[in-house]
Image (cartoon, rainbow, N blue to C red):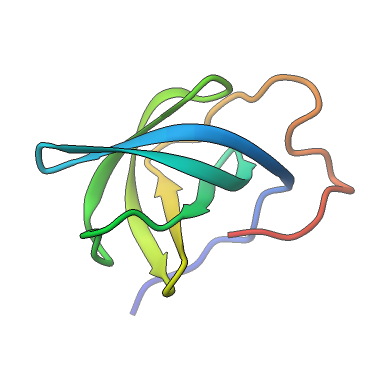
Length: 97
């Protein structure tokens, strides 16, 4: 059983990022972003539990694990919390991963 920690505040946004996994690289649309993870439009071929590298302007390069998949979206939990610029992850900003 996987222990789920409380959600960190997240920011609903639209920006671009990149996912690299097993030699493939995909540009993705970011749906929401927090210090602990990201929800993106799902690129082809990703599987739950897969280890990936996510890159975006606010996060830089960060490693994570695919923890949620739907037909259209993919949730990635970061291995470490990232420091986001002001305006991201405000306590009053929507829902997310």
